[in-house]
Length: 70
Image 1 (cartoon, helix red, strand yellow):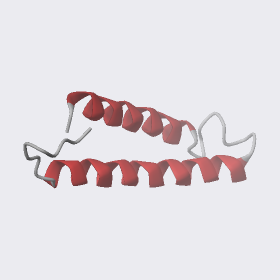
Image 2 (tube, one colour):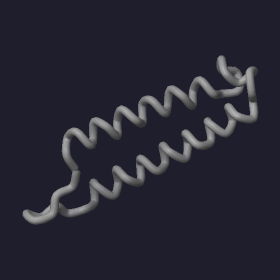
Image 3 (cartoon, rainbow, N blue to C red):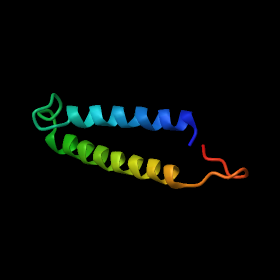
Image 4 (cartoon, helix red, strand yellow):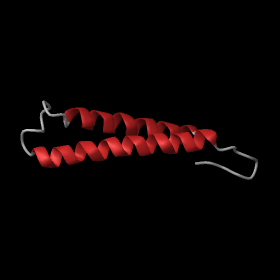
C-alpha cells in the first residue's frame, strides 16, 4: 500500500474516532438530538470497521511488478 493511502486511512480513522467520542451520550452533541447523534455514532463505528477491513485487504494482498495498489 502506498504511504499516502496509509496516511489517508490513518487520518480518516482519527477523525471518525473523534466524532464518535463527541457523539457519546454524555458528549456535547447528544442533548441536541439524541436520535440523529446516535445514528452518526453507529455510522462512524461502521466506517471504522470498513476502514480496518480495507487496510487488512491491502496488507494481505501481494503486490507484483504489474500490480499496483494505490
